[in-house]
Image (tube, rainbow, N blue to C red; front, side, top):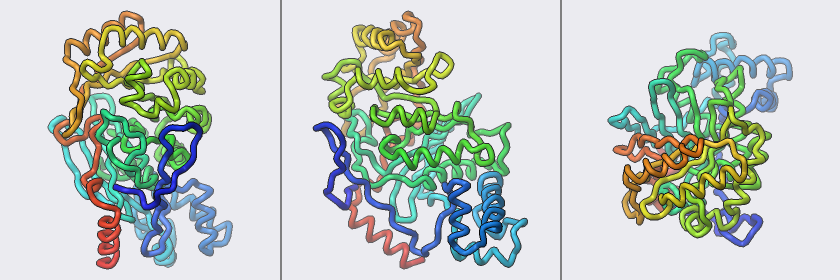
Length: 401
């Protein structure tokens, strides 16, 4: 995919300016999607459409309940709102979901959805069921700007940020598919969310913050912040804000412990180095032994998997006094990659060194490899299409509708 503008967004430093994300195209029918709006935004939107303030406040409360507690997708099902008002609401607003282009189920139970936005942009989400939890891996951008060389998703170009509604919509769609309406706190299959899908969440900070606020709202989807993890490759200037304004668990895509290797596989390291990143982790609000920071470390054969690498990782975590857990991730191969996965014996030896230092270092079991849903494998087929082709397809769909 290509961005429509060659303009660049200046950010501090000399390396890797962030391409300007393409603007969201308004809905062809002119209606406003209510999913992802805060309670105040929902009330203000209804008032701006013509409801008098007291009625807008009441209707906002009712609509909020139907959207997030009942999973309603149309106004006609809202039985406590007068039937005469349903057409008025339907004419002006929509309760959106991403379009499902393709849904796949892995042999291990992992589910992957290829989704499409109203303006024809494709992105993916993954649901990973376990015995004691179910984790939804949520995307924050269409494409990615970080170019991590081991990551298939990172080979995509950034097209645009997902809106708060499109981020929340992924959670709503997953609950649709799992049959988890009406909402209830007990017995859910979807118990956890990780912002680890396509894109860098901290380069779409406002939308991610606003979306997770809705997800965590006790009157909304009511997922505890302790069950939500945000993963970053190390956008250091935004990490303190993430802790203060979002307050969820932090995961950091570390993947190397020396500058030359991390510069190669996580190019953002040339802007925000390992020491700067780890200091930001040490300063992250709320991090403690009960809420450890997770460091993700993909195991690449003969690249970052030596005993010396493991010992240096231990030294760094101790030096910055970080309450840490290290997730060791066997590399998930994809066509054209130059990397190989470390052998099981090498991964085990690496893990043992970290465990012996008193730091948890479990090896993540790859999930969904057979449907390209594993860590680092998300990359939609639409990436191979030109921007002009996508525009033509979106226009044709709009004309057909």
